[in-house]
Image (tube, rainbow, N blue to C red; front, side):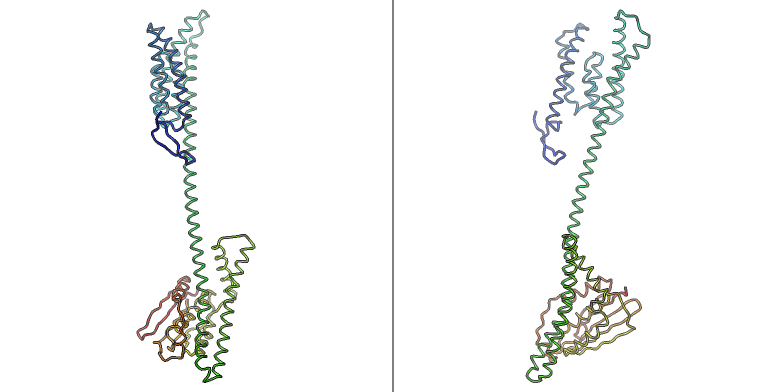
Length: 439
């Protein structure tokens, strides 16, 4: 035998393909059946040649050729059955008939062809059996049986030779197709599970990135404003230390107060994160995304408990900027009321970051802070004029900028379904506006 290619078996390994056989044991089985069938047909061919006055070698050679056809039963089962039907009158090829009908029924041949060839084989076997049983009865010295004997016995022989291999082949074929279907479904499910695992990993990566962004935004909002005011006061302290000691002492006290406030807010946030991590350690080791989700939930709970800043603290926030030398006006419209903790904190952080940006980029500029309580929303706007080149000593503070302030404000507002707009004004200043829904 020569190889014609390769294929992958059920385990995924590459297997050698021999003509139409997938495995070597299939070759051994078919060749063995071919030898048995050839020997049977040769024996029966010799008997047939003796009855018909033909040379016995011709009958034997014919039987060998006919019997060896069974080797191609997997590739051409219809041909094997047709050959067995054609040789039925010569009373040869019983093994070929049984194996051929089984192979035909177990294959993917249409059912109408299986039924047609089975009927032809049954008819041919019935006729030959009827003639043979009739001859045996006539040659017997015993009393003649009833007229029913010959048809009944020939029917039993025909049905016994034809139907069992057909039924068994149909069962094996159905079972094979079921196994292939289950294997395909298993492969499909394995692919789906692989895709789900990849998507879960992507979602976990996204959650980790979101959590890092959230923590960075919180750190920026808590530290940037306080430290910026501290730097401004420190610069003013340096400028007036020798000229006005009393004002220097006052500025030093303000720097200390703001530093303590910054530390307090930082401790509160880190405490929430540590609490979330402690809860996770008590349960079981989990991915970073789960820790981030727990921290976010803990932060929300802390906000609901009133631990974070609120809109009511905006006036204090504006006062701190005034103490740093900034000219700030605060205008409030509408009656103040309670909002969701997330809305309260976001409104506070937007105004806080806008004031921090004025300290960094527009020292000495006048600032207008507007806060409007509307029917179903709260709006805020922080607008500063053009920077004052000779203003308040803040220009010498050299405050660094990370470029993330506006990005963080936009993310906060959009996360709550609000609207955020920022940009330069015609007068050379800058304006930050945000609108947050009530709930």
